[in-house]
Image 1 (cartoon, rainbow, N blue to C red):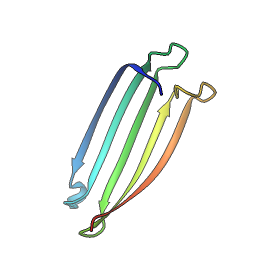
Image 2 (cartoon, rainbow, N blue to C red):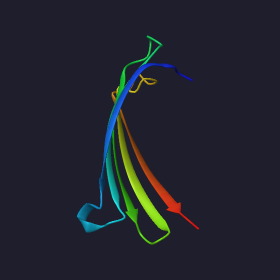
Image 3 (cartoon, one colour):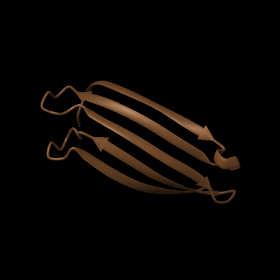
Length: 89
């Protein structure tokens, strides 16, 4: 586990995009610096859209772009795609 010296994060959630009252679009950015001087200062961006497909089910596609990944100096960026399914019963 890596301890962080400092972290900065900010985000915004837009409710009811395109008149879809139960949907949410989120955007975020972050930067973290580890106490371990051998690790890079990592930065990232994230975007998601939570789509309410029924009264009990939502699907959320997610995109993260990690710039200067702290744990992998061989890469300048990493792209992570995600998909969440939430069912309430």
